[in-house]
Structure formats: C-alpha cells, structure tokens
Length: 181
Image (cartoon, rainbow, N blue to C red):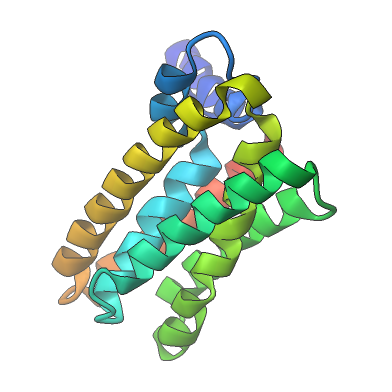
C-alpha cells in the first residue's frame, strides 16, 4: 500500500517539474522534457494516435511539430502569454474528446497544431535565453519521435474502438493529473 501511494505521489508530482529552467545542460534537458513533462508527453502521443485514426498520414504530426517549434520561438522572443497553461490543458481534453467521440475526431484532430503552439510557447518562455537553441533542438527531436510513436500506436488502434476509448480515458486521467499538479 505504501509503495502504491509513493508511486501515485511521484506521478502527480511530475507535472510540477515539467517546466524548470533549462540551463544546466540544455540539450539534455530538451531531450528529456517531452518525456518528463506529462502534459507534453500525452499531447504528443495523443496527436500521433489521432493522426493515424483520421488517416492524416504524417501531415498532422508534422504540422503539430512545426507549430510547437514556432510557439517556442514566439515564447523566446515575446515572453509569456495569457492563458498558455489553460491551452495546454485544453489540448489534452480535446485529444481525449476526439478519441471518445469518433464523429468529431477529424475536426478535433485538426485543432491539435493550434494547441501545440502553446506547448511550444511554454518551452520558449521557460528556456534560458542563452540555451534556447540547444534546448529546442532536443525537445523538437524527442517530440517528433513521440508523435511517430503515437502514430504507430494509432495504426494499431484503428481496428479496436474499445481500446481507442480506453486511450481517450487515459488522456482524460492524465489531464486530471496535470491539473492536480
């Protein structure tokens, strides 16, 4: 019981460390960020899954990756924007809704690059200015890999509507953890 509680607390604590300063080893931090920031991890995997389910090939993941990088540059240049964290949480809710309401899947999937802009913006704001480009190289690389992994999972889920809904439920649960953090 104690081990389960400790694991649960660790999982809830992860989002709180999702956006630290990235100056000690910017490339390393950039490579790890999409894997340790639960909000980013779930958004990237969810977008990849949606791309596969809506038969958008890799156009949707590439648009999402481009929007995320553009957002990072904007955040780096202009600083914080009002509502950024709400848009990040919204991306998880939209991805989950797309999986849970298949009739709206395509429309909701096409909104993901817009939400990715705000994920990237958060990266740009929080990266140390002198470390921005190295950090960005890392997070863009791993983000692309996570989008591809999500796409592969989505290809497997195409024939299993029950598992699609379970994945959507997992995204909702992840969103709840991010909000709790």
